[in-house]
Length: 88
Image (cartoon, rainbow, N blue to C red; front, top):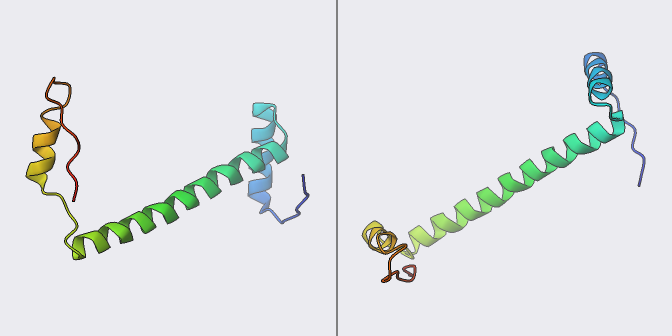
């Protein structure tokens, strides 16, 4: 495990101390936990943007399935006649 130093605003340091005491966790644990959540959120944003750009490209290239086809397929869910998902 590596060590990184950084500056905290005074009010944030105070809140971190209070939270660490309340949770009976170290400040390092809280910081690691918060950074993991932040990084995971940012990675999700990047994936969502990539997927959106890919979807726009599919639409522009007419690689789409109609809503009617999707609804017909959904109506078969849970029945003996359940079909496969429509494809392009």
